[in-house]
Structure formats: structure tokens, C-alpha cells
Image (cartoon, rainbow, N blue to C red):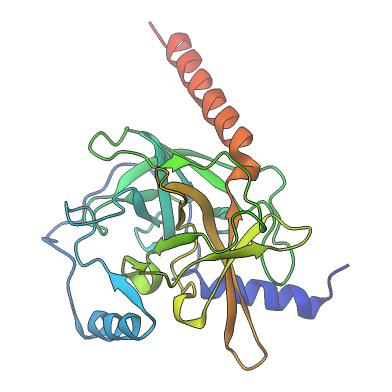
Length: 281
């Protein structure tokens, strides 16, 4: 049984990856008024400088043609405040970390928060728990959008199981809205080095490529043997030393939940069709 101290440390670590306290359920698509583009204020510039020091590439204009990962979005609570990140896996489905959805999320955005798209329903993995100190268990949630996203191609899901022997050292990229700014690991700074024993988390190493506040729910993309890049993980947590140094970051493995994801999406689509049929005059 976990001690109160261990539970406190677990929640503290998770809080580091979320930008603000959780929100509540919401309704109605909202587009903020008088917002032409993300503002680069002093706080933003400080964050950009900080990210430059930790070897990350900063995307200044998410949602534009220059964004190499347009399917990675930000997620918001009902007060339209940034909570974390998400990934488009089907035209009307975003996957994120379940710990970001403890209180239901309200919106997602693919253009840096200029346009917020309403979440109609959500589904956490039935076995989700806050887990141990290092990472939550089954930390996945599906967000079903009210309207499909037509102009962005969803990312492919990795179905093949990750092997710490065969896949160790493969190049990856971690993408999220850490500190409110969309960024990604660059070059060879992010590589798979194993899976926690008895856990569902993949890990990448290097203090210069660790996850930050707001990265929760973001993507870990796998580039392996010339194959099409695929989503192999959803950013979940970080493990720190006693002195505050990040030892590694972790992500929930997609391959372990590929079947659950597919079946859940099929069930949601079936229920949606049945509801429309029942509501016909």
C-alpha cells in the first residue's frame, strides 16, 4: 500500500506537467475575441530562451504549414485555460493523458489557442489510476470532438510492440505545449531506452530533453527503419532525483492499448449513430 508521503509525491510530479489546476465540463465552441496571433510577451521570450537551453525546437506558429507536427494540439478546461496537450488520432478523436482529464476537459486547439473546438464526450481508460511515484497507470483518455477536424491528417498509431532489445536506441520526438509553447525534441536528443519493468511506460533519457509543465498528453513519435512515423507514446510523467534533477521522462505506450483505443472509437461511433437514429422526428 502506498504511504501518504508517496501519494503526495506522485501528485506533485503530475502537477509539474500540467500548467494550471483542472477545469470543469464545458459546452459551446468558442473563439477568443481580439486575438490575431499568439503574443510573444516577456514571459514567452523567457520560456523560449529556456527551451533553447534544453535543446528543443520551438514552434512559433502552431497550426501553420511550417508546423511539422500539426496533429499535436493543446487541451483546455471549461474556463478556456490551457491544461496540457493532446494528439489527433482520427478526424474527430484526440488522445491525451487521463490525469489531464480528472475533471473533464472542455476544448482542444490546433492553432495555439486562437480557435477552441468543443469536446463532446471523453473516455478514460477503465483501469486508470494515479499509480506509483514514477508514472500513472493506464494514463490515457479519448476526447471525442463535436465536429471533425477536416484540414489535419491524424497521426498513425504504433501497433507493433516496443522491445527494449530490438528497439533500444531508436530515434523519437517528444512534442507538447510545455510552458504553454509548442515545442519538440530535436536531432538525436530523444531516444527510446527501455520500458519500466512491470509497467506500461516507455522512457527516454537525457536531462536536456525532459518533459515540462503542459507537456502531459503530448506525443512521443517513433521513427524506425524508414517506416512512416507513428505515435508510440503519450507523455505521462517525469522521475526526479532528490536534488530535483530529471532522471527520465515517461510516456504511456500506445501498442499496449491499441485494441482498447480502436474498440472505444468504434463503440462511440456506434452510439452516436444510434442516438441520431433515435432522435429523428
